[in-house]
Image (tube, rainbow, N blue to C red; front, top):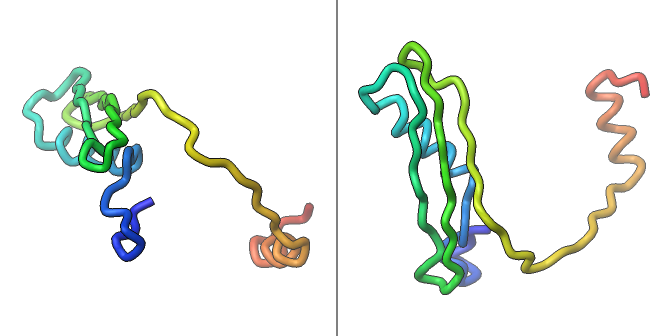
Length: 98
């Protein structure tokens, strides 16, 4: 979570941003076929250092797949309750039969 208004200036690790970065860098790399790899370091300033490993595969100059991985540490857990009426409303709007 990134919330500067709540004192959270940086995410400790952002996999979605890392894959977007891989796409950005991958299309700018000169190779047309092969695997590209990067190491993304994040969260060091906030004392929760994270290292993400990102890979992109290129075929004929186009990115055809990306992967991101690393280790994680559980910092919290919880549950979410979704009211039945919200589920039913979603089914109606999507046209789902069941």
